[in-house]
Image (cartoon, rainbow, N blue to C red):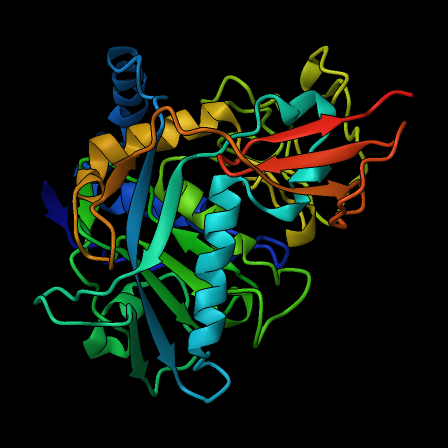
Length: 373
């Protein structure tokens, strides 16, 4: 796999709107402008993805892929130096979101419950470092650097950041004091992978406990950015107000990003469609508050699996986390009930008549049932 050094000198005109959660689109466009070979590689990704899905009709067979993570905590003050517990809370949140065991899965509207996906992707803090030594998957680097932006400083120890671990083998996550009103950004995949490949996330948006800033305090910034790292676009497509194509067939066409917590349905019949259900604003690839996000779709799952197999194949076969070997077969696994919750998310052992209840199973599936008197 060819490498390019992602030297990203962001021009003074490349400032994001204060509400802009994610810098992935801006940084990708800058990389494509600066590196023609990267632009050529990215231009081929969608056709390569479509072909891979066509050539692998059994990609939906039950397998669990485990991605090893290294978290580089680049800190100047003690507040930036987040705890091990806060980091672990983010890994736990990722696993719940990507396996659809998140308790707020019950908030997915009924019309989309059938396409809400257990992506069968999990995450673990690496237990083996690049030279084969034991690690807890956390690399702490003290810096004198001020706020970081969307340049290469965060990826480079000599510039006050932290060098990446081999990006073919690890998901590199840099947690730092991130400026410009930005929550995070990621590098989408292609056959050209740069030295700064991975995610960059503000320390106050990472995890579910500790030093956090509401309403982005449930770990969904990392869930969103990993989606980009695995080749998902924003649900509204390539540009704001564009009614663009996110290259996923089971997400509704959407005009633009959503903020806060809209009510369902939101923007019905937008983009000149006949979709009365409106925007899928609770999708992890929108911009709503963390508490309002709750699903990936089956189409997004397929696209992420294609990305791993084509551009991040070392994630399929490794021993970088204790007890994992990349992926494990779980075919013919018997579905078992984990818990029953009411519509407010409260666990219950009772099954009253004429009352909707949510049944959550160990394979990530969810059923809504009403026992009729």
